[in-house]
Image 1 (spheres, rainbow, N blue to C red):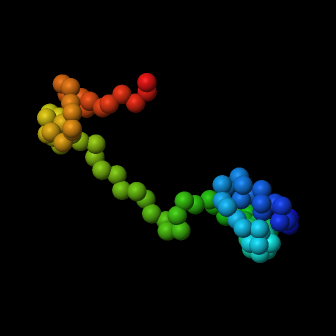
Image 2: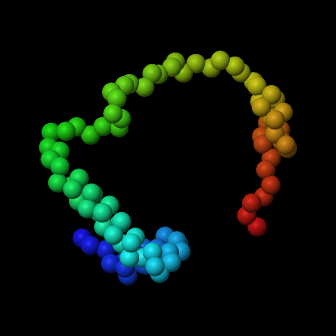
Image 3: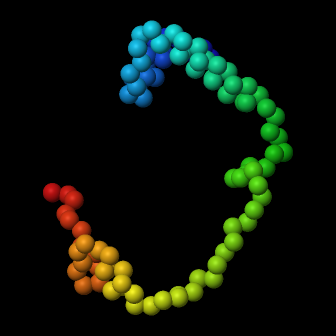
Length: 95
Protein backbone atom coordinates (compact mmCIF):
# COMPACT_ATOMS: atom_id res chain seq x y z
CA UNK A 1 0.00 0.00 0.00
CA UNK A 2 1.37 3.37 -0.97
CA UNK A 3 0.12 6.66 0.41
CA UNK A 4 -0.08 9.69 -1.84
CA UNK A 5 0.08 13.39 -1.04
CA UNK A 6 -3.74 13.49 -1.18
CA UNK A 7 -3.94 10.58 1.29
CA UNK A 8 -1.68 12.46 3.72
CA UNK A 9 -3.82 15.59 3.32
CA UNK A 10 -6.95 13.57 4.16
CA UNK A 11 -5.29 11.85 7.14
CA UNK A 12 -4.13 15.24 8.45
CA UNK A 13 -7.65 16.61 8.07
CA UNK A 14 -9.18 13.64 9.91
CA UNK A 15 -6.58 13.94 12.69
CA UNK A 16 -7.17 17.70 12.84
CA UNK A 17 -3.47 18.35 12.22
CA UNK A 18 -2.37 21.29 10.12
CA UNK A 19 0.32 20.17 7.69
CA UNK A 20 1.86 22.77 5.37
CA UNK A 21 1.66 21.96 1.66
CA UNK A 22 5.44 21.62 1.35
CA UNK A 23 5.48 18.94 4.11
CA UNK A 24 2.86 16.69 2.48
CA UNK A 25 5.24 14.95 0.08
CA UNK A 26 8.00 14.22 2.66
CA UNK A 27 5.37 13.06 5.14
CA UNK A 28 3.94 10.69 2.53
CA UNK A 29 7.39 9.10 2.29
CA UNK A 30 7.68 8.81 6.06
CA UNK A 31 4.24 7.25 6.38
CA UNK A 32 5.00 4.84 3.53
CA UNK A 33 8.10 3.70 5.47
CA UNK A 34 5.97 3.10 8.56
CA UNK A 35 3.36 1.17 6.57
CA UNK A 36 6.19 -0.87 5.05
CA UNK A 37 7.40 -1.87 8.51
CA UNK A 38 3.87 -2.86 9.54
CA UNK A 39 3.49 -4.95 6.38
CA UNK A 40 6.83 -6.59 7.17
CA UNK A 41 5.57 -7.47 10.65
CA UNK A 42 2.48 -9.07 9.11
CA UNK A 43 4.78 -11.51 7.29
CA UNK A 44 6.25 -12.90 10.54
CA UNK A 45 5.16 -16.47 11.26
CA UNK A 46 3.48 -16.50 14.66
CA UNK A 47 2.04 -20.01 14.52
CA UNK A 48 2.34 -21.67 17.92
CA UNK A 49 3.20 -18.43 19.72
CA UNK A 50 0.95 -17.86 22.72
CA UNK A 51 -0.47 -14.38 23.12
CA UNK A 52 0.99 -12.50 26.05
CA UNK A 53 0.24 -9.35 27.99
CA UNK A 54 3.80 -8.74 29.13
CA UNK A 55 7.30 -9.74 28.10
CA UNK A 56 7.92 -11.00 31.64
CA UNK A 57 5.84 -13.90 32.93
CA UNK A 58 4.54 -12.85 36.32
CA UNK A 59 1.42 -13.44 38.30
CA UNK A 60 -0.36 -10.59 40.00
CA UNK A 61 -0.15 -11.03 43.75
CA UNK A 62 -3.56 -11.09 45.40
CA UNK A 63 -4.34 -9.77 48.82
CA UNK A 64 -7.02 -10.97 51.17
CA UNK A 65 -10.28 -9.06 50.84
CA UNK A 66 -10.52 -8.01 54.47
CA UNK A 67 -12.18 -4.92 55.93
CA UNK A 68 -9.50 -3.05 57.86
CA UNK A 69 -11.37 0.05 59.01
CA UNK A 70 -15.04 0.70 59.51
CA UNK A 71 -17.13 3.83 59.74
CA UNK A 72 -14.53 6.28 58.47
CA UNK A 73 -16.97 8.20 56.28
CA UNK A 74 -16.62 11.25 58.57
CA UNK A 75 -12.87 11.33 57.93
CA UNK A 76 -13.38 10.91 54.19
CA UNK A 77 -16.08 13.60 53.99
CA UNK A 78 -13.84 15.99 55.94
CA UNK A 79 -11.80 16.34 52.71
CA UNK A 80 -14.86 17.17 50.61
CA UNK A 81 -15.76 20.78 49.87
CA UNK A 82 -19.43 19.98 50.48
CA UNK A 83 -21.35 17.01 51.81
CA UNK A 84 -24.90 15.96 52.58
CA UNK A 85 -25.26 13.31 55.25
CA UNK A 86 -22.74 10.63 54.42
CA UNK A 87 -22.51 11.57 50.72
CA UNK A 88 -20.43 13.95 48.63
CA UNK A 89 -22.41 16.91 47.29
CA UNK A 90 -21.42 18.02 43.80
CA UNK A 91 -22.73 20.84 41.62
CA UNK A 92 -25.33 20.03 39.01
CA UNK A 93 -23.68 19.26 35.66
CA UNK A 94 -26.67 18.88 33.31
CA UNK A 95 -29.08 21.76 32.92
